[in-house]
Image (cartoon, rainbow, N blue to C red; front, side, top):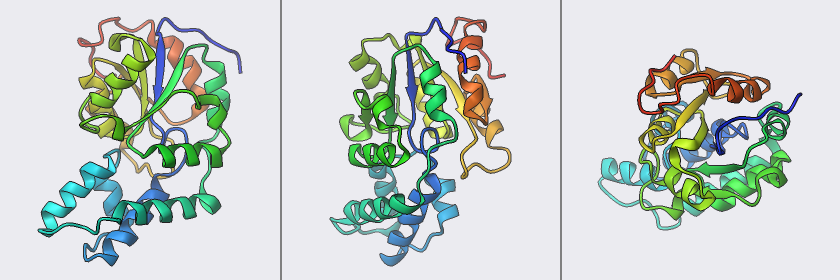
Length: 237
């Protein structure tokens, strides 16, 4: 794969569903834990309602609906189950390592997951070393996605203006947050959790283009430079 250059200054990757094919695993862990605690829900329902949402934001929503608090150690319970499932089931998104290596730009991760979950996932998938120095998570900001806080925090830490950032996201919540931060977004719908029509959902949320295979990403990064340089003014294609 030929290395390509871009006029952007930073590529920001979401983690779950973009770097690692983990959304189905995470939804399974959450669904089983919630059902045990009296909130009956399936993995597919977790996916539909909370894709891209931070654990903190999802918990607040669920507790409001339950009318009571979940156990204090609920996040720990879910995390332990997720990491246990990761050990046997987690895989990287196909060709994501090659795609990352082919993009000659600074890169970072901005994910709704916890830092431990992100790092463990990247290690299990064999791509941790590609991104290890620049990982940012929802616990570092006041508001998770779809608020722009995490994306703005990542850009600030990487010393890049928001309008010079290109975000790779798989969830409408993440796309919304990145667009609110003034960033350009590519929507990825190649994860095992993506259902028919997910590409259209991402474009409706503000992704300028969508793609379903990581082999496409380096060329797309280069092509985006030929689209309008006005991040705020484009219409999704």
